[in-house]
Length: 349
Image (tube, rainbow, N blue to C red; front, side, top):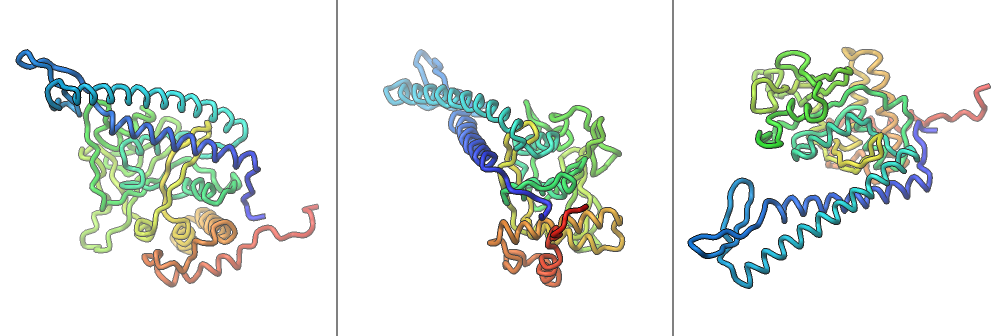
């Protein structure tokens, strides 16, 4: 027993079916957003009809009325109507699948965490400016491994967003577009508020926390402690944390996850190998809360064992992990050797 269990064949089939439908839903949604964005209409100019295409707030002429422009106009509207019809049908399928997912206990990611990730995803920020770190990353790793982790190792009341300051962040305000990160969180839950001015943390009325963290600056003389996220002065700031440079510079993994209500979403996290090694490092820090050190160690051992038994192609000697100190990477084998799970051959009488 390794604190995780296999999915049943029915759960595997249902998960794959849900992901396939969601992939097609995402493809058509992107097609509508890009290929059929805006509008196309005829306008009369000096007594002659011209075909115009609207993108954003600007109208651009595609030429006077002709067989070609009439064909372009018809193809645009027919294609958009067909795409929207397919999207509506797939939306119904996802609703139906969500009910089944709940009944089969497939949905795992906490609902509020999922909604925060979706809101960031709509802004194009997940996997670019932000990645999910901390305990919530385990939900993605269990999906990659095709297992179900014991709930006691997953309990959390917050979500950690790791900010990559190398990404040029643009949260542009406008119609239906949040002006900053706090505004994005308020689209999820209006009760979200900064816990203090210039804080890295937001909390809602139920005490759910969103923390924004980033790697510490190597140049201590330039270390300002926190870095603003959005363009306004009242937005969250990222607090600098030692050791996160290993995570931000490691490979990223992405997967479709399913939330507690049974709906899928795309999430991005640091590579599980860097997660395990980072947690191991945290577990040995003397200035770390003793209770957190215990949990860090458990999670490091758990992910290392999942890698060994479920993802053996992800090796700790991979050059892609070069950002992590070799002395820490060398401890991966120790993790695997010391964590063998529950090996008792007698019941706990």
